[in-house]
Length: 585
Image (tube, rainbow, N blue to C red; front, side):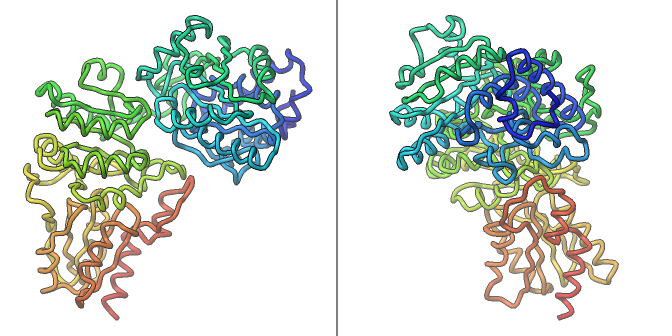
């Protein structure tokens, strides 16, 4: 059928089987054209084309509710629910997000970008429905990779007790972002090998009815299975075996690389623009592999994102048992790291900034209170990182720096980073978090210290008077740029690299009172609870003026980082302009 005429799932419900198969082919091809030019999640969407069509064909959406776990696999869902022009018209490619978004459509129930949440959310909807004696189907679509997250188990555990309509569709493609890890996956493998007949059945053990669909990319098989469970009066799991990247050979053959991709050549699958220059993921991987080879106690942990850490399949194989992927389970990774450290190992947990929020309790209870020397490396902790509302990287400073016991380091250069990382991995006195700078890799001009045990000692990068600018981490370059502009206006500003975000160099701050009247702080994070507020609090009862620059405490979605910097007056010309006004008052 003509895709441009699809305004809702009702438009496909009268199609015959041959027409539905043709529709799946057209949707897949349209998706590939957009994604190859625009970038986005490739494999997850290709593997669920038929399942998405079948769900909307069988269930009466939006009356019936579908909650998509992570929701990075909902591009086809969006094409069927009134947003097809965002896939047909290049000028409208950015009209929709890469995740479900209730602001876009009534068919999207939640804004979701993190894994393992759908079963709990859908279970809540089912309970809310039952409390009101309403009748409609509730479906949670969850990937096998998401089952490694603790919340997925909690949702399944509670959902089994609902005693009413509750349908969990498990999309099993034997993949997470990379390969799956954990004991659960041997159970799924047995179910796949026995066409769902294995006696060991995780879902039945919890109390679910169970249906297995081996041909999870067969639209006819899927429709048959979904019709069986529609309007069911008890919890059921529909386990579908799909192929991640289905229908596009490069994605089928290289599933990890095509989980998410920038623009690529559709005929070959090769990136349209090869990455060049240094990157912190490669720097981290090289450094940690070297440490592993030199010390068998050193290990690296990831919660399902080895690519973020630069650990390719080849490097993971080389690291062997010293590289630990716990699956998409940040809480497990943090607590396990604490146990490894307690036993005398030297663990480093590398994690995306927005993902570590999920392990706040472990950072506080399991690590800090127990004072285990875990090393945490924060990736994408920056305004220059991912820009989806669910993946914002500017909350970690406020999050971690306010937990007692953590030493939170903010290197400004690659040499500082490597020095801090080597010190952190050798010392055994503190848990240490290191915030990897955002943007391009910057190098130090001179020597970098190797011992960071004298905590909270800031470094004066250039000495001046009148105005002092403290630039944290990757924003040290912004502080220096601002100082250059002020110099053009006759102000010789002091520039300070704080290096530590969890404490203050009170001696240096006190000394600034002698020949400075304004201290400016700039940080790549929110102001509320951030580093700058600590400086302001210190000077609160003194005559020192303080101006804090950072991000407003609010969510942003698919932002242009240059516009967001300007909106928060986080550019050198704007800060310099403000400084001139302040000192003239």
